[in-house]
Image (cartoon, rainbow, N blue to C red):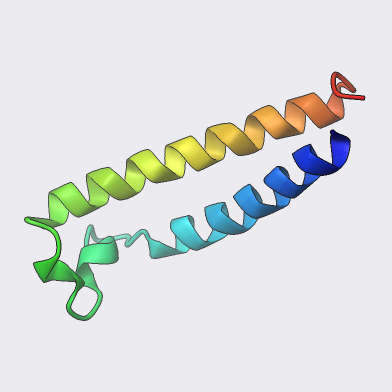
Length: 74
């Protein structure tokens, strides 16, 4: 079980790095990449979706960290 939690934590850490790097400081983010702006209806919806996914992945990472750090999972 510990190996499974470690695997989830590593995958979520890598995803978190990638998702944070996709954020743009000026609000373009994922919608500013070539051709991606046509997929989303607006830049705001693209950023809103990216923020939700980043929050979910961050929550998974934090839960895994607490489970492993406090030794709840053995």
